[in-house]
Figure (spheres, rainbow, N blue to C red):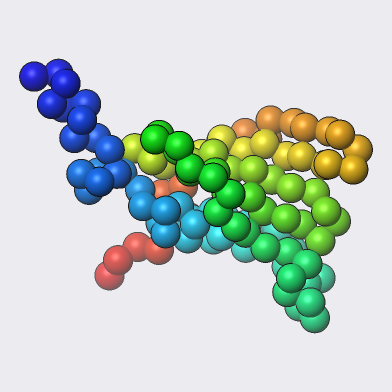
Amino acid sequence: MLLLLVSCRDNKGGTGLTAEEAYEGVSNYCHSEYDWSVAAGNPSMMYVEMSGETETEYELTFRSYTGALVCFYVEKSSGTTRMVERVPTLNIENEAGTINLHDYMQKAE
């Protein structure tokens, strides 16, 4: 019985996030938390992209106009998202906290 309950929790069973939902939530978060006005003339300076996927999570990357990266590790089943800031040119990596991605997704009306 326990195996049946665990197997129903994957994103194919309708209880988890899809890749599109993860992208939407991370993009909404980044647009609310970072100043995108510096990229108004050149939108390719800042972006969010899907960068990987495992059985349990999606990985998305936000690139700032400064070249800094924020990697988002989104748990498919819950929407809990761990953030890691990286500055590749300085070889710096820091845990940046967690968010609930559902807080940044559009609500269906």
